Length: 88
Length: 269
Ligand SMILES: Nc1ncnc2c1ncn2[C@@H]1O[C@H](COP(=O)(O)OP(=O)(O)OP(=O)(O)O)[C@@H](O)[C@H]1O
Ligand SMILES: [Mg+2]
Image (cartoon, protein in one colour):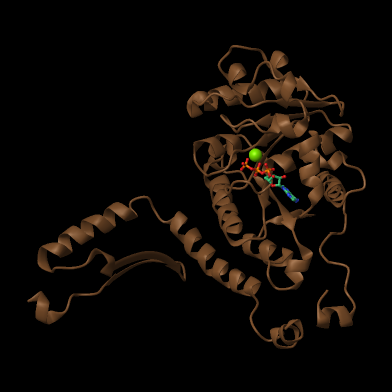
């Protein structure tokens, strides 16, 4: 068993590598979140309210992110509209 | 000029108090005048690790609330000259510490000629931890090679960089990493994050690595900072950490296991 592990283990991804990959993604995400302006949650709520006046949407289908890109600050709004058949 | 150092981690139980005790004792043993303050209001642990629990008469909260003077509350360590302990209060009122009160205590210690004021932070990222780091000039981030500890360390670094007094003044808090409970065998087996991975993820200068060691528990049983347990790996690791903290160059140690022969590696044991 140990022999097999040892011989095969070389090109299989170790659990420590997996941990590192997950952390890399998570920390990048959390760092950008913590730099997001304080008004973001409230703005998200208000945008949701406006949209819901016109379409019936699920709160989870609205994604808002703020990114810095090439010196520009980009506010990205992503909304999945409900199924046209049921929405009408 | 006194340096105020917070020992912090976000996550609980990773080795902040162990590190505070050993770094304080190590700095004092090298001739510096050191005060170590337990900010863990309600839980009081540092006095036990330092072995002075039976000599606590007044505590940090008593001083902050004006019920005792600093001189009355500071406990002079019996093993190491120049070392003084300010115990935490066992009061259940977490709001017993105020920012103004803490500032007054730190200013008084500075005026008394202390070289280092070490603040042993409570776990968490809420008020208690924020108060412990607020006045810091430097921070020792204590991290275990494990996902949740690394994540919490990153969050506490964010708070240091945003909410400390230095951050408010537009100055940086100098950050140092202590990676503790490190198990080289598990790192080699690919089961534990390696030193380089953690340093890269957090991008903080490494002060040192402390191996996982039975001696830490024995030292705490005895009420002696583990740095004073001569000849143990943990003691050597903390001595290196103190030396590097004082600006000396020391190669990193305790990163590898003694290698087993190929035969033993292939067939186990
Ligand atoms: N290098 C080590 N090897 C083995 N055990 C260790 C090591 N460092 C710390 N420990 C053990 O881990 C436990 C927690 O340590 P410690 O009290 O220093 O952590 P802490 O971060 O101060 O905890 P808290 O968040 O509760 O204040 C203790 O039982 C201690 O003996
Ligand atoms: Mg502690």
